[in-house]
Amino acid sequence: MFKATVFATLVASTALATQATAQQKDTFRVAWSIYVGWMPWGYLEESGIMDEWAEKYGIDVEIVQINDYVESINQYAAGAFDGVSVTNMDALSIPAGGASTPPP
Image 1 (cartoon, rainbow, N blue to C red):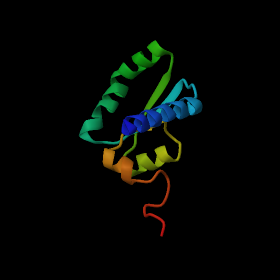
Image 2 (image 1 turned 90 degrees about the vertical axis):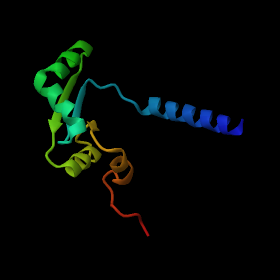
Image 3 (image 1 turned 45 degrees about the horizontal axis):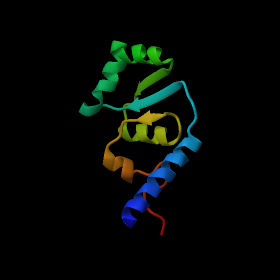
Image 4 (image 1 turned 30 degrees about the horizontal axis):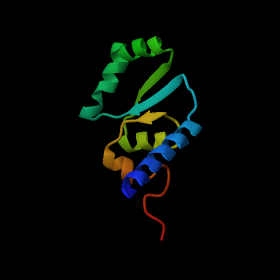
């Protein structure tokens, strides 16, 4: 019972924190690099499918191919993009714009 209560508290506080800091936007930039699992981003951009969906929902989505995978993550961390395609392990291990080694 204690674990369930702690879990529910964490979920609720995360949801409230997210709501408090979320801002409404209508323009988005997404970065991606060449990797077989991320090729649909290029297809969405070239085929016009993303433009159709963006128009339907009244938003603008710019999909940008970055030729260097790590640089795409760095640019996302620097705030140049609203989203980036990244592997799970890199999302956990590459710091968001900080040093790559932990402090002493």
